[in-house]
Image: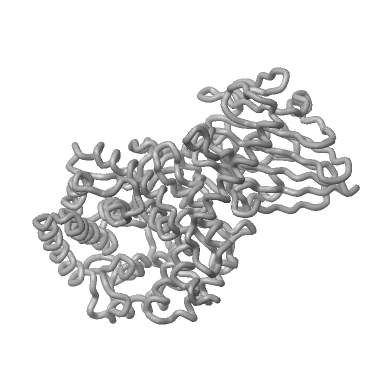
Length: 600
């Protein structure tokens, strides 16, 4: 049965998931939102060895009795160590190459698998069975003296290896005498021996990631957890454009038989801001600079529409194609539907304007950056502020992307205020006094109206919608966005009310009222991190630390988190790896950790 006890490998062009048996169960080509040519995560096997089973790449050790897996220290390189009954042992190193080459980042559409004998006389069987068009058979498979071509209708992958090609094609067992290398990538001839290419790419990729980690400003406590989260976020950044995807998967259900199956292989402007902010706090500002380039192009494209932004874009900055259901993939554990595309792109979500401005604000203040924010960039952001001002009290789908209704959501309204307020700050920073006055006045108007309509006097809390009477977890962000102070009695009361109404065990739900798909069954993980941060902000630090340690224990063996969790069984659900969840881990660790200058 499929699980989310998976490791993520990638390089900023593609991402792949490796299961506990060393099988690549998910990988899209030629980029994050491409065709999942490895898709067994959503296509349960019909039987061991059956040729009808496709969409995976596995290296099996015959007569295996033991298996171990781990990441190489401070890298996204996964090592799977297998042992057979006679003591024969192999180590499989799986990675996607990423390193600097000729002054640029080299991150090809490529996966490398290196099998190294470490003891005995192990025998392996290789099953490389890509699919195409979301689980359909390939158009053809051809081979040469040291390669196999997997021919799809839209893409051809080439597997180059120093293993006998017939052994791979016919899936015959073979002894591993020393090392065997498999390089899967573009339909191009390697310029060197495959063993040399694999060894060099592994060395340079490992060095690249360890250098990157060395530059991070991590908290004193929970260092390994934060480092793994930071690497994971970096793996979700599309190197070519700077776009940041929400997850590498589609249609992992939020809960069993819930129909809450969505495609997350795209760039949500809101989610991307949270990723940028988390990496900024760790000192990894290059992600922000790359993402800002993406946002500038998106804003420029939307200028003709009066500054309107979609909530989500493809990794190349285009509008998403219409959402559709794919019948050729049964789904995770057979739970469908499998969706391609996301209807959220058609929604109005007014928080996107504030999110986009927030993502850019840092460049106006950080003197480390080569390209500083200037008046030209500020002028490009102003139409987003105007759109935010006009939209703050208008109904939208909200950050929870409700499909069947629209309301005036408090979080959306607050993010519109954020957009105007930050423009006022930026204008002051640039010495544009007239624009500073203009935007500060607009921010004051919005703050007054939101404070009046989002506060429920009877309940004594802020509420999820204007003039409403229910709570949602996004209200836990009000202090982080500086809409209220940490010690504001209204915020303290709201946090405590959320703890009573939305918390189930140690996990906080985004909301508990029924929506288009019924009542939520599982908790949205980032909401628990928001609650932990809010507890720390209002002085309940011991409880916050206890809850943080508890949620850390829910990560899989590789330190990764999905989108949702079952509060009873603590099983992870939802798309994987979820950037929102990893952002939450980083933000809580930074807030709760002992300071370095007080540690020793």
